[in-house]
Length: 613
Image 1 (cartoon, rainbow, N blue to C red):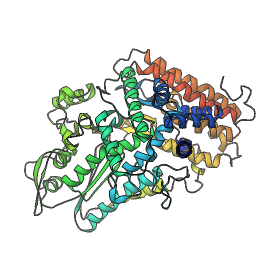
Image 2: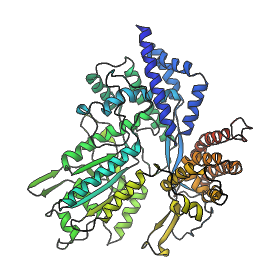
Image 3: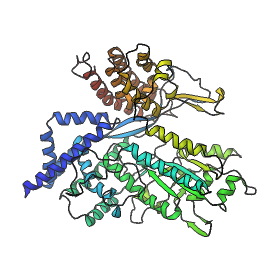
Image 4: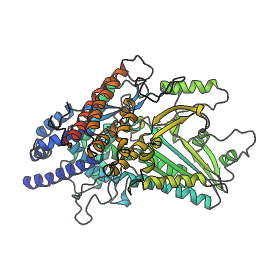
């Protein structure tokens, strides 16, 4: 019996390892973990897998010693999330002249590979139950929740076992496309029915850090799972509680190093970035919010991609929104985003046709004393301006979560004000805005299907598509330009396209792009786009540009040192001081993996045995 249990457990562990490895192959944000995975294999993969199996199936003391060693090694990588922009009155340079100051950081979990394998085991068993893609009738997730969803064929339909396929999650691009396209299709249907349509988009601020999951909440998940699933390994509860211990240790570690006054962590146990169970639990947490939107508002369409929200609704002719939008209401100002949020999410009695709705709170207003310093500053500035609407910050009302979910009720999930967008489409008016949305989605969806036409860019040395101008005036006035910066998404697409065609180019003039790229990517741009370091070096190595790959390798450590210098600049109002040196140190393992891979794949750069000097 014990031998059979070990055999079955080994099969589970191998499948978890295989799916974790495949996931990391496409994830460019966790290169240090990729390096750890290589060491895990080189150290003897059979021996390491056997150690996990022994711990899972062995007596409690073996399991406790094994997991205690993992938990003790947990720390957090600190990577730049946002750099400070241009200050008012600052000269806009086309060169790398200003100190680079980090405005906010993101904290990726640094966890031994064995811990990640145990986390993936949790995803395959309890996570699969919560996701419920193979059993839609009993699915606990919202139907139109698109991000971080498990593969529909994760389990074999005949054997009922997890497949040996390396795939774990549905491809993000197809999920994102479905989320957007479904919303636009519903908006078009409303216009075709001679009705005004409204699209509201918003997302949540620092969502992973805002959730609080108590040990009681997490135990309740296991209790529900245990009562619903009959056939599961005996060690599942061990894995379940280990995952929660990872959450606790990570939360404590981040609390110790966080010095960002805009990131309030309190005493919450939140979701670790870079840990696969977090992605399942992020959807599970918002399932209660999904239910509240669907039942209390019942819009034409509500879709969610992780923490990005789209709501599409018709606007009845007797609605106050219709009157405000068309200017038919007497003595009323123009319709604002705040009006729409208050109308849909605030407590109110509203009439829609022959129906009367009473919305209990979905969001509640955050009092000024609970705001972050930046939020308070914005509130005071708008309060001083008699013409400006009041500044409001909204958070999910605790009553959205069940009364028994006492931990979730302590979450502080706020709307990110600057990400709220309202699009109002009048019936009978031009549909150009809607058609532009649809065309843009189509372009993005087919971006990598064919070899791209790079003639205009490479022939004319025109790289304008990867830059973004921030304009505070009308779009065509030069005086309105407040900053010029690389657009991360456009740069990523551009490098992806160039990687496809770069090794086919032999013309010296066209291949000058390799050299120009090092000028475009100054130290600030390299810091902001650290996740693209590997791709950039890969392009240079594939194109046999050894000289430029060496220069790039030298430029990377200069850029990570620049973050450390920013911490000594005395700009206390901007960068979180404690996070700056941590960000600099976190870039080192990321950098070493990039350089190690780059030089190792180059036939002339292997004098250091694949290690950067």
